[in-house]
Image (cartoon, rainbow, N blue to C red; front, side, top):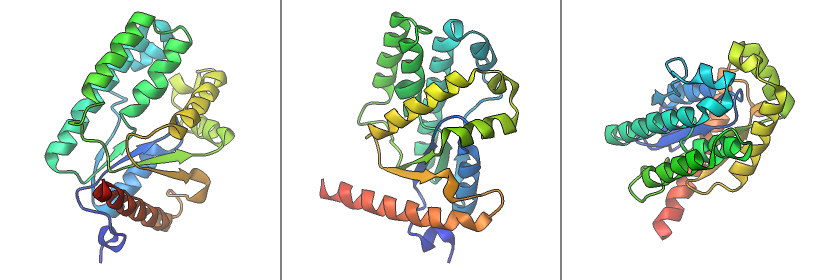
Length: 224
């Protein structure tokens, strides 16, 4: 019996991995996809024409960056739905507006007009009955110190040169965001409970939780 059947995870599931920068979303995405024989959908970082400019000048490029991410994630979500599911996503479309755009608006690095334009666009595209929401959102969480250590260890210059205060604010906003998130079912996992790089088998307890969460979600939907 394969792991997908063992833990009762439907072959057409759409599972999104969310969490702050450096928490290990890409590693979790790859591990889940390998275990379940699912396809992956990764955030397009290396080909993003705005990301490097954004880290140099938040105010100048925040709106451009958010619109780029929104368009790319919407296209990915549409492709996944048309393919018939069976995907693990690295980062959710909901984080863009609930965390990043709002943070820049609150901090004055995105104008009111740009913020309203962006949120109106997001709501028109995503917050409708026609948008294919994931079956489950896996939220990765851990201590702030452990996440900062991961950011430093992976060595991206534009991240290493970003002030720690930015990462701390982002970390706190993620915690507030997930505590109020209700667009789809959530499974919260502490990054200290597993080590996918050194212990491949540590994915199985996570798969069991994923299967249970999706089963409970389907039961809840069936009662509506």
